[in-house]
Image (cartoon, rainbow, N blue to C red; front, side, top):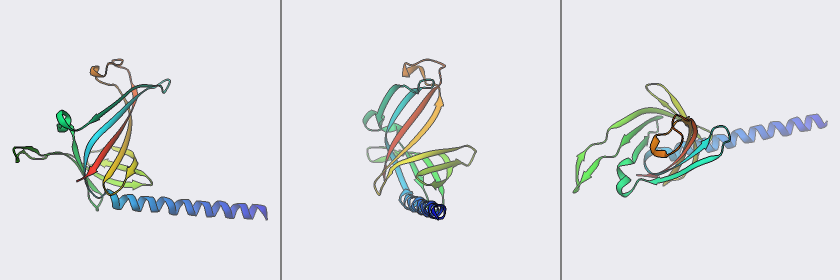
Length: 167
């Protein structure tokens, strides 16, 4: 009797968690459709052997850094594009946007799976998304340029959280 009851509880919990996951995915899928402009990025660099934080850097894409921002466009059909922002001087467009990546995307729970049309893929946790703001995270392992003033030719765990606003 106890085993049957325990099995029933496990099954109910499993069904509930699947429904909750589907609900989050559906909500995120509706919210992500549109054009998002990057507004800033926080980069945390960790030592691979100790997982100790060795550098924490935040940059906003305003003022002198405004040219570092980009747009991410998510269509309802699962296609996505990363593009530069048109350059405007004196209310006149002097350079148009250039698409730098063609992707497809899928929402998996609270993660965004991006697949490049030329190969390669990345999974980015969705830290926050609503009708106006989105925060995505990516984690990689790699080396950093000398300007970071860390060990050259040393691999680090690099976590970047990027903030976007809906356009």
